[in-house]
Length: 415
Ligand code: PLP
Image (cartoon, rainbow, N blue to C red):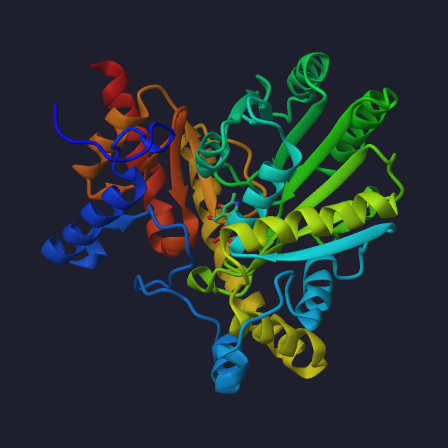
């Protein structure tokens, strides 16, 4: 047996990241046969029609105007005070919930998930999320000895499956003191679904019902990584519903600058705790700050200054919004094209509302994915289907892709 040095808990299956692998293959194909002949729907970032990463001018002009010492200096562990205010404004806009709110800076939305999982679950606990989910939830949870359990996101009519949510929520609350649920909305990755206000009411009513047992601790982690690309007028209205909840319900919002500010590599985000109890809020602050110190110390100061500068200057904020809205519109057009074409030709897709991705349920996703590479279409296989990144594919390619996918599905089925 070959030498091994890693501690037992640190040894994981040696899988190559499948998304990066397919993305590499797509790029190779683009080089070999020309970009116009390849559909690369693997990338989880906004790309222009020529396959170049979109970077918002207003964001990067501002970043480059920041003084060196404001980039280089250490930052406060919890985040610079101005950043904390900027996060609240950028995240909630006019829908700030009432209650005690604390913001702790984190490296991206991923860091916020890590802070919440580590501090609000016990080793061995089950964490609840939907069966269509962003796979790093599992990696982050398993790394610290927690397990992901899932409910069915959609029922057979493709509506939000509240019954399944309720059953799993109650099942976990029967056996655990803590019920920690991750809800990625609006613009869910990978389906593009957004939980409606009525559905939020049901989720919160159920939580309040379980919270009548004061021994239970309910934590709702709301991952809003894609919120800036939600198109509904009042897509932030649900935040108001987190006001004045029972003291044993804590909402933690995972904020990220990655998508909304095209700042993926800057690694800046925040965990935002919302509670009706001041002690729970203070405890949130100190527990999370302890974890910051233990894991990454402080975060990217330049990125914090960047957000603060944009949010405190109404002219800059307005220009940033105009910049972002252009890309939001571009994304909507691409997604609408893909969805409408799928409907037209009878390709079954999951209910898309907003965001970077559309999902297509299928059997044998790996095999279908491989088949599609023969047509130079690259997307991401998931456990229960395929993820097509409309954020990275031009409108004209979004129009032809559904037919190619449908043909591949029919071919695999007929084999
Ligand atoms: N949550 C979801 C569902 C995501 O897809 C992502 C990024 O892809 C994140 C959170 C966090 O991203 P980051 O850590 O880059 O802010």
